[in-house]
Amino acid sequence: KYKTVLFDMDGVLAEVSKSYRAAIILTCHHYGAKSVTDDVVTEWKIRGNANCDWTLSRNLILDAKDGRNDVTLEEVTETFENFYQGTEQQSGLYKLETLI
Image (spheres, helix red, strand yellow):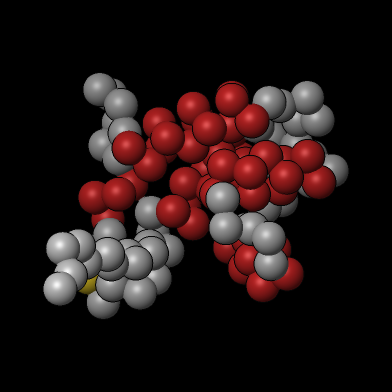
């Protein structure tokens, strides 16, 4: 008898390209890495070991020639979450997610 059902939302039940992917790109751009595009994110995701969007964002920033090279994971995480969850001044990108 099962007591819990667990669903994988990201890309399985919910379309997240306008939320998580956008938060990655906006976070990178926030720290100067304007060269990061959706294609770049996809390339890194395909390589593997890129499931944590905070770590991926930081790695993309550090790898980009135009990115800030001293950004911390804590800074990236806070910025990413502000874009994704939203702030008092800005609506969160999660609101753009739709069911597949």
